[in-house]
Image (tube, rainbow, N blue to C red; front, top):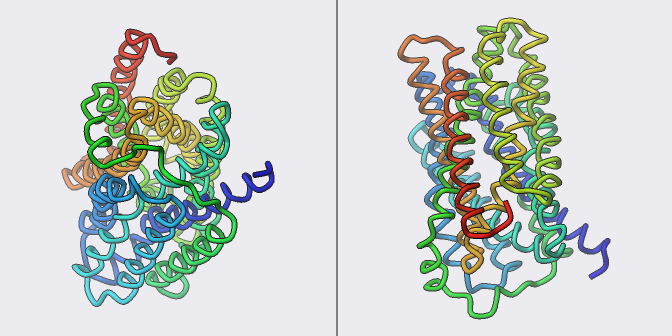
Length: 390
């Protein structure tokens, strides 16, 4: 393949990440509309985030194992078909319970798709640029927060929140066409098997990396899940300005994703510990100054940049920890990310329902990030002890 063909193929895969990013994050911007329309509480509205995240946690390892021996391009297309079907179910959901089920099913192919796409991108780019290739694949998720999520939030506010699911289904359909036309067929490694992937899980490095991803990302989701409520009720923004607030956070995530990929090619765990410290500091400041509009937006942007640095960094680290189980290890990043999503939503909801106020999730998130710093230090020690590059 030429460099242009490789770039186009990776961009096609990233388009799927864009669709996934819209459905994962636009639900947060539309939570007020859904809560009012269906007559549920804030905490119940948070379950729409949790249900999707749990779908990812369950689906990522199971569907990744199922795809361990399959040709990767065909399997990516199959996962997109499942994704589209679940979104049509959510669009037609007659009640809150069915909507919860649709969100869970929507999450099932998420991690397996990203794992497959990341491995395809890394193999096409080669060892020296794999971190940047993975960053491009994951960038669809971040770019969605800049363009797709604000647009879907606006459409949901103007025409009804259900139309967000139609938008995502159409994006996934476009991804299928682009991947079918531009991505090469790619066979799994010789000797790949479900048994081999499972045996490779007896690995302390891998599980420390998973724990790091869960704790490190949970704080960001504690803020982001309830961002609409903070922006309106603490900062004083109008409902109509929420797409702009989401756009600012998403801009930070785009920058952080690309810088994270670049720095990960230099030092994976070195990038992780700096990013984790930055997340803790900026979330603490966000909680303290959320009532000041300009500062709130600046700090929200900084949270997005620092947290997004962890995306390609942790994806690369998990692949490194289990070279004999690349499909499963890559999927664990997304299981961990969405376990963090669910955990952050729960932590934030509990602190709010306990009467601690809408600033409390930011402080809980900062504490979680500091725990992540401690785990990163341990991961660095393990890596150095085994003689590997951090």
